[in-house]
Image (cartoon, rainbow over all chains, first blue to last red; front, side, top):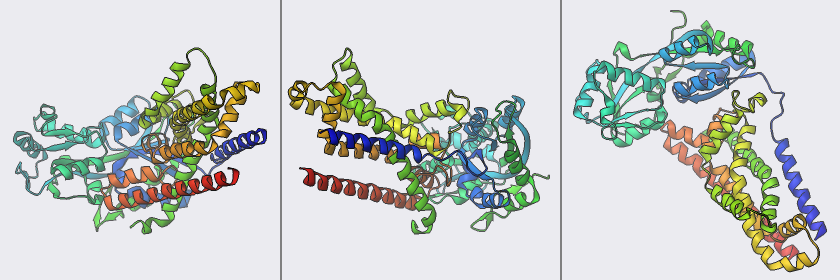
Length: 277
Length: 221
């Protein structure tokens, strides 16, 4: 029994050592953490542009894809070096509150209003997003909201306000807040045949469309600009200033902007570089 | 469809295994002796400890993830280590998650064995820890099943590793977070394909572990 016990204890400690040994060593290649949005990650943009940057600088970019609200929160907590998001109002507040520095415009894409082919609210063809949302609210047609404080959610609430409609009146009936990312929300809309506001990038890369299609696009107010900024090292001293700045400089450089402009899904350009406008 | 992902898929599978095996080993080192000791020892409040262990079986993964996130965040008490969004953070979260499972099941099994051989151990003059370890050896084949259950919970969960790992491509993306991501993209066939791969791996490991256990059991009697 004693030898058994020794063997058991030995096995247990060997397992513990193996567990510790498998933890990554401290010395790793240069890397930064970028808190960004689901739209940039899930549309495949980062997969297209980041290898070029890493090849050139040797800096690995670790992207944590969240809603804009959550991405800014990760930056505020100091858990990212760079924040790359799309909600101008929230971004300006983030900088004004001293959490971020050196904000730069990077690119834009646009939002599109998605809806079922049957179009119960009869909005297809209009170019006016506010009018379309008003009709949806009046018809009480099913509408799926992100409901997650993301940039897209903020934009949707802005458009409803422009329409003079209060979607929260329809909460639980025609207005459904899913509290999820763009993709999961699109999955929900697809299975409910509901209207939904989406960024064009995620929509073009999205595969489970079912009966859904674009019903409203081209309204200038659907413009969706992205900004990039460094988390303020004065607030969080461990922020990798030189690597983070190198990333920001690269993405607004001609090379970075060309990489963004060259990303296409199904022949369609998803993001329009505008750092120099 | 799964085939086209191949080089990356291998990486993701390996990371899943590495994280889950590490976390079960880390939790097991503490949970097995502790579970056995709780079974054997008599102390005030024992009933409360046992109830707590059993209740923690229902610990939601996402709550563990959130708690570990707040601890490891740069703004949290352990922020100085800078291990949020690394595999280490995932190992810690999963270890916390499987700890109650391993401890509670071990306690139950050892308590049953203790009932049978208590008199013998006491007459030999064995103390709490000696008895606990002796009983752990006695029930070692059942422990294999318990450890497999812990491993199953670890490798199948998505809530905790998503929050503390961040699902970073090539760094902290594991099978479950990859499946969640593909589902987000609406690529349901790929998500299902990955799910089948995950299931196959779990099956293979269970078959292998059971075979080893049976062979050892035959050999040692």
